Image (cartoon, rainbow, N blue to C red; front, side):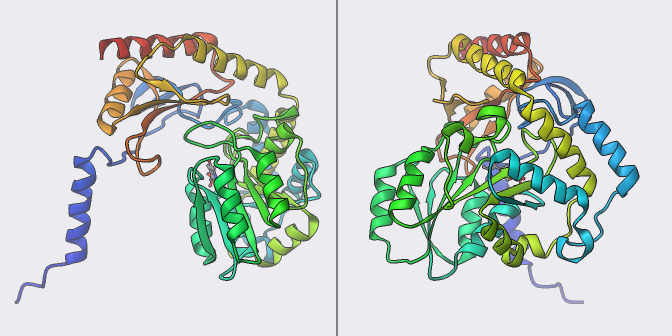
Length: 393
Ligand SMILES: *Cc1c(COP(=O)(O)O)cnc(C)c1O
């Protein structure tokens, strides 16, 4: 027997993995052994968690559990088909109408995930002859969507409206689409949506607003970023994810009726995939009611944000300029942020270390995310731990 030739591709992966490890860039999963909540059991340890996107504490809410439990008895577990075959259940349909009315747009379409919604919308709206303009700090799913559309991708520095205007004015594409996170997921700051809409009107572009972190949190009744800024325009395509503040799973795209009809006809990530389990839509109907009635939760959340920002004293660790539940502490180096996250863990507190490529090089950070499920005592415990770790160097 002759020895087979070396499998070079596998060798390369081994080398690359070792390289990630050496740079403190290898990612590990933790094992969650409780429901998602402020207090969780992870890897056998009880921890106070500042990690989730469950901003209103709805992921394990009794009303959602009850709605899902009832629905599972009447609808079963799986949708069994895609929406355009026989998978479109009355619960999906009811949820689309409920959310369209809730955010004040003519129509809405459910997608399985926010990632798939962004891919579906961008590739349905624009092609090779188009140009996509994107904030440099946008979520990866928007970048991937732009690449998959084969349109020209032009990125602008974070929130830099002057550069975007120059780019839009010099574009020779007839089809233009601006992509933006309403709340930047690793920084917590807002996009200047009124300025973006004005530019889209001036240069005849679509505006896709990804409100993954604003829906349920911003605006009257938690209606999201458009309500927060009081914006409405047929140019806006609104995308909200339903696995963050809404506490469940999925995503919704809302806009003009013709746009939604076009997506139903053309969005490949809508067409060529199984519908989500209807019980999730039943849980989401209960979730939207709680979001709408949740001003008390949002006031409590804002108070926690103020408490954190007022009491954290870490001169070399900057809190970033954020008024949302995403409150990152900028540290810089990958090793230092891992060490800080580890020290917090030793004190029973879970805060993720966010490293490149999720964030730009040398801007590794602790990403604290607050939830209405936290108490003032929880935030005080986090602040004490951060202050003491920082003081210790
Ligand atoms: C989480 C997130 C997504 C993806 O949503 P999923 O439903 O988790 O796939 C898209 N955009 C932004 C800004 C996000 O934070």
